[in-house]
Length: 70
Image 1 (cartoon, rainbow, N blue to C red):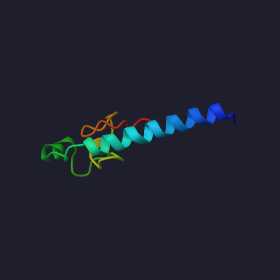
Image 2 (cartoon, one colour):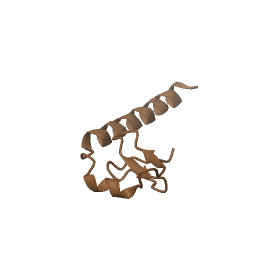
Image 3 (cartoon, rainbow, N blue to C red):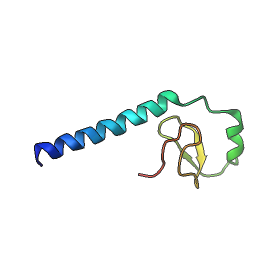
Image 4 (tube, rainbow, N blue to C red):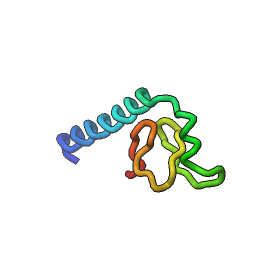
């Protein structure tokens, strides 16, 4: 890899890392009403940033906005 490619990759990684940290810092406490989104034994996606449990058809966390898509 060339130095320019490595610099570009480094910037992209740092940008992603900073965006995730900002989402975690800006996430509000999970509201009680969120428990109504899922049944007791329903499958869920757990947000890696704020630990909110979201229905599997969600593409983004309802609490902090983190994408569930790679």
